[in-house]
Image (tube, rainbow, N blue to C red; front, top):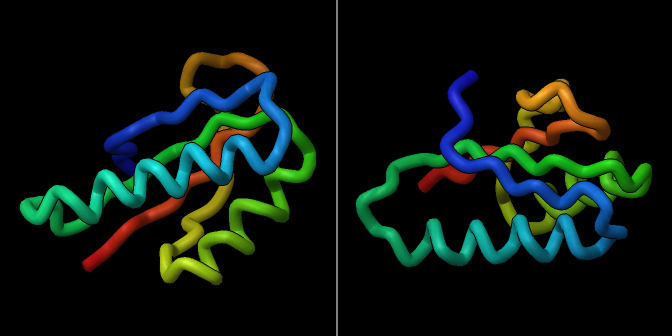
Length: 84
């Protein structure tokens, strides 16, 4: 899957990774030319595995799944898709 934007929130505790994701969604809404966007959130807080999917359900975003960080670093990459 092609990730359009990576947010590196490793070292930050929830809800900070979710707040960063919300800001990315707000920016995406402002860009009317974007049909869809996949955002990857890199997080090492164990709460992110619950908080990010829950946020997606509340905000109408699609939680795509988890992946290893593309830089081989610690934590998990959580993939979220924003669609029109």
